[in-house]
Length: 95
Image (cartoon, rainbow, N blue to C red; front, side):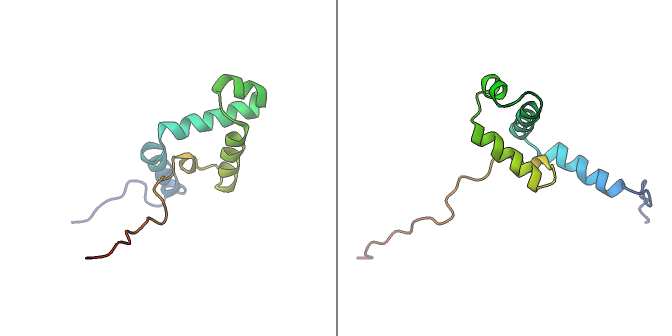
């Protein structure tokens, strides 16, 4: 059985599909809120942003840097895992 692809050969259809999957499933509400804070900061400045959203200056600049370094992809603003990279191993005697 042959599977027909509706947008086969249409320029940009694969990148549009990837973008829509990222925006639908991989971007949390918290990441969207952080992006909103960054755009508000760009438009109104630091004092208004700190007053309106109660966010520290260092957080805003960190989010801006993350967006700049990753070409504006919003999924980089998702929360990262808080699990320690190296967990402690028990070191007691087997006796």
